[in-house]
Amino acid sequence: RPLRAAAAKRGGAERTFTQMVMAAATGTVDNQLELALAFDEGKVTPRDRVSAAVWYEKAAEQGAGVAEMQLGYFAEVGDGLPQDYGLARAHYARAMDLGYTSAGLRLGRMNLEGWGADRDVAEGVRLIKLAADGGDSVADRVYAGMLMMGYGVKRDFQEALVWERSEEHTS
Image 1 (tube, rainbow, N blue to C red):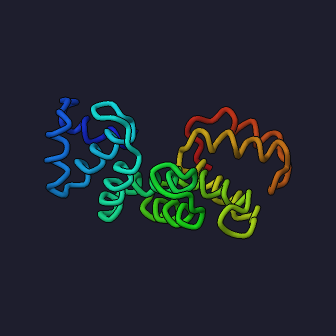
Image 2 (image 1 turned 90 degrees about the vertical axis):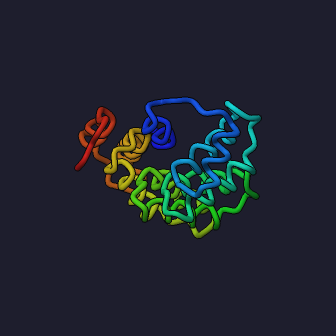
């Protein structure tokens, strides 16, 4: 998981909450992500999605795609940030621009549903396929289902089976 990369870089050493806060205050993105995750999951401090959003925002300002992804999710569901589909879409799009292709699954779904913009099935399919091409295993299965049903794409059972069975499909 990308959010756990900071701990792995330190050899998995656990820090106290106070140490996390002090480290995040130095402004390094890995430390900001670690503190955001601590608030997000509530493992070393009580869960606080509003505080998590503050630290994800600081990391996002430094180009952390995973932080943009989390902020998009918070804005989409209204947890940690007010529900705002337009803001969610903007965060997901920035995450994708930063190379976090898994955001395409969420943004694609928003396009399919017409959340925060006019419904656009073709763009939704394109984004979900982009996420699948990027290695997102959930997007693989979603795209496979679209192929099976012919939803937004030409129905193709053979291709659907390839995507359904794929863990790292890269067509």
